[in-house]
Image 1 (spheres, one colour):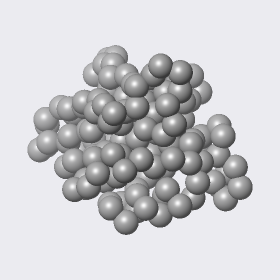
Image 2 (tube, rainbow, N blue to C red):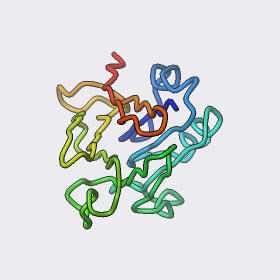
Image 3 (cartoon, rainbow, N blue to C red):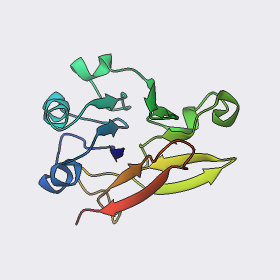
Image 4 (cartoon, one colour):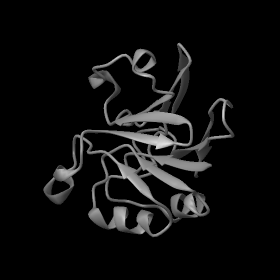
Length: 152
């Protein structure tokens, strides 16, 4: 299973991000969407799971703050701000925690749990890169494989 993970579009869905998402089996958006049209465009590519970011207003304010996605044999916990994680993902049986907010891409393993921040693929912030992530979910028993994709 090929999963595109993105965050912090802030109303800008770059053509490079759309191209990178083509062929995905699932798309995860970790918040700060900024424009409901972005969700419609992503849903046109693949099934979408999305959480609300701290700047999502209007109809986007109705998005859930957290979501649990079952991806193959793996449970993925999604939220926007990592510091608001109020559970122990290893004890809860999650394989990964997907988050955004900082605009800083990160792949980190802690107690066999993947912590994945795809960075921001929306407007560039300071000198931070414009990125998203790919998450590959293999056959039963295989570990998750994540990579950060630089879009510019």
